[in-house]
Image (cartoon, rainbow, N blue to C red; front, side, top):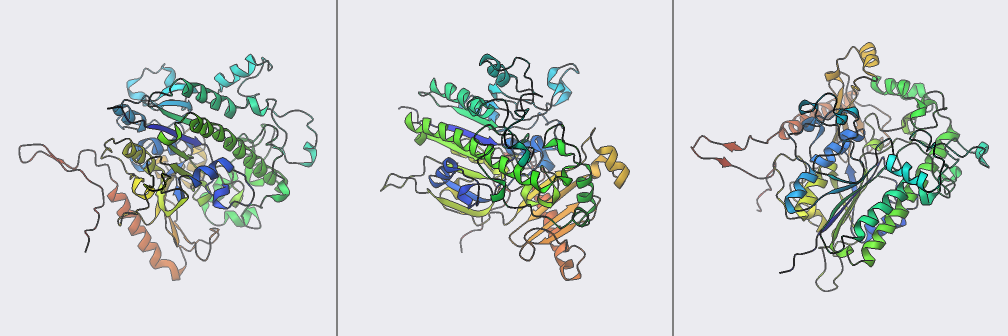
Length: 533
């Protein structure tokens, strides 16, 4: 019997806000190919990452574990080698998962020599993943390609994003308006897409697993023509924030510290002086317009990939997952990047095209155009892919397969809220400031969030909590934690959070027992499905 074709295309676009797609009614950004993919598949409207920044969030995405279990809590924090991941598990089905981009995985140093190059960067490769093209911060494969195409041989990872000097109209727009020296045909997104398409072209008769990991729309916010001018700042909404930076910082001591420490040059040109929180409205609006342009550029290249799959007859045998590692504040609450506890940093897109869901009458996908409105999390992606590949889902995972939801069925024991964590210890960077300002040790620098349809509770290890009434205050301006009318909810949600934490303790071995003289291994979900009445 001929082996059934099953391909996996696992796509991440870095720092993509969940509210920024045409198919979720964003008023400005154009994402026609992703909108079409959502129309032919399933769009998840309440999808959240587990943590920030890039390395920790990807650790959760690739291992299916909450940050409290994998403990790779910051860029550069090693990922314990004892954990399995999506690549290692896919190999059990004969796949060779191949990366085009990066995974930001920090190697476990305990079995490596101190001179091992893997310990010189946090941008290692997740174990089990092969490299088609690996693009870390040094961008060497792409820069080598640029040089081979005649670009200046002095280009390096620091200068490749330099804007074109004296660009017409730049003085009237924000600092992120001028394009880079490379054309849109030669961008890193174009390069990665070209490499993936070449790789796919010689694998049309075999099953494959590709992980396409774009940097964009992550900073630096500089977009090649025509994407740099595609969106007018005049059409872009202003950031959601208090009238003054001082008022914003009054919400919580952690927020005040973040606003006072994040430099603008993390997001804008190196010559940019001052704090990110003090960015002018002109630069904020242009940054948003440039951010949207980078999104449309990624959408264009995804359209190329999907077109190839359809023309080569592989679209109907390929599971396509599009998501991000985390979101972006874009000036909301005076923040840029993804630090803190606000929704904009954690709400991310998820679109899944499952080719196996078809209507027996029409032959078309029975799930096409569906939108899932229950809470889903990044940890659900790994078990979903494994489930689709007919592989056993490891018992250690915190996430759950989304295949029932793809078929229009919501299990009666599905989660009613989303959870995420943020660890702000930042060893070697801001920890001295944290110790001086708050008197906290690194292990005290963490927060955990529980967020449902109505309320959002933020618990901090050693700082005061926050409670938001999202129905009355959807923009998260008013902390109700000390409000007497909400005091009972602080207790209720802190108890919910404790129960969640206890339920998701590591269970790698706890459901195995030898007391009877033989090995007994109970397997099942953490929460049993309620029996039918």
